[in-house]
Image (cartoon, rainbow, N blue to C red):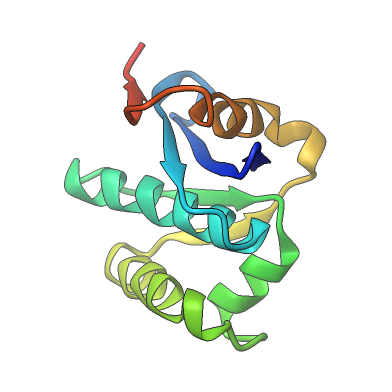
Length: 126
């Protein structure tokens, strides 16, 4: 999400009942929306892997990034390392990925916008 030449990455992790497990808002360099989306996915997956959370179902609202992760579309050189890391973690932890519409991804979008307003990354655990 871009605001005043700043970009943010936001993601929410929920349990199977839809309850909050973790959410984050990180500032990033603005390259493209796809970069922010992929970067946010990597942060979320990495956090889950570090906490040994199993049975992860990742939802993204960008079909372009989903296709890059699935290997349907080749990522740009700037995204290659991020996509490689996501793919590696997905194979290690048997993570699934699916598309969700932007309207159902409002919390992550709001977190990304919020990230552009502060100096430090934020993690919310409740």
